[in-house]
Length: 318
Image 1 (cartoon, rainbow, N blue to C red):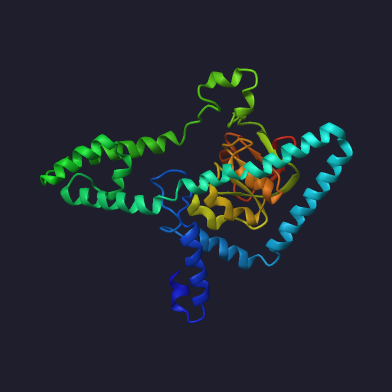
Image 2 (spheres, rainbow, N blue to C red):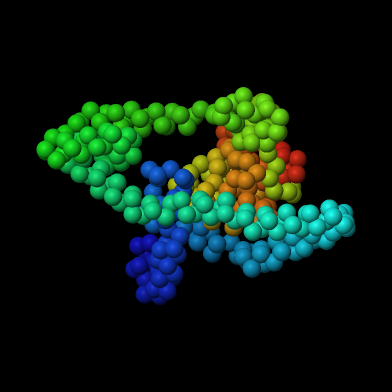
């Protein structure tokens, strides 16, 4: 950003970036309130813009036209397979899905609209707690319960501190990091997935660590063989290889920018109505989600094959 501001010929670019961040910058890279928004940390946006410039063959208009052609072809094939009442039932359900499906994506987009207001307030409160000696760092506030904050604010009014809360915040921070290593069940409670009609709600499949084929949930059709870009968090967005297969724990609206460079998607967590699944279908790229351990099994740059029809991911080499 500093390099752009130092140049005399980038004013329009800076204006466009500011306009984008004003409208879309409230999105977080995850749905966790303690994570920064794009307005606070737009570095991933700059990485995406850089990749778009470097990728000479990237044409978003052509991409949309290709997706439209695939849709028309599929509609023609369906028209030949179905007739009469079946065909019109399909058309009605397709209309219904087109009308209401976007609400799933919109809910994630709207969820964080208050964060540009609430996060600065939380940061300021955390800073004041550091001043009085209750916290060691402003971010400790994200690891407190409401009752604990109310108590510490009441003490601050009398210029008193409760330093043990800083230690408690660190304990919870460490616990949060350890919990990231756990493999949660696909459904809560786990027994729910054994019930008839509930199995489709599985969001993670526990794969054998010795197998070269990972099983998951097929959510976007097609087969693709390409390099894997293993992206664990937004700080690694710059590692995205143009034309590769995006391999990640899960996605949120702020991750959508990576789909412009992806030929396929594989995730640890997800279901047919998850964010990544919806966007993969919109982009027309094969996707398998809910593998459970793809980010642990697949190496960055490794060649893999994604079968979005069968729900498999094959590891081709190391």
